[in-house]
Amino acid sequence: MLSVEMHCAVVVAAWLPGTEGQGVSDVLFGDYGFTGKLSRTWFRSVDQLPMNVGDAHYDPLFPFGFGLQTQPSTY
Image (cartoon, rainbow, N blue to C red; front, top):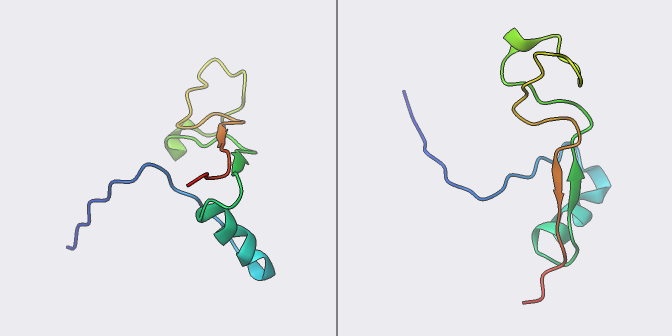
C-alpha cells in the first residue's frame, strides 16, 4: 500500500472551473484575493448525519459558513 504524507497550509477545491480556469489561476498566483465560505456543514463522519446548525450534537469538522478571505499578493 502506497502512503503519501502531505503538509500544506491551505487547500483550494475548485470543481469544474470550465472556461473560468483563468480566474482560479489568478487567485492561486496572488493576482486577486480569495474568498471562500462553506455553504454546507462539513461533518466529521457519516455517523453524525443528519446534522443541522443548532442541533444539540452539532460538532462538525468545519461549521456552516467556515472559510477565509485574503488580500491580493503584493510581492
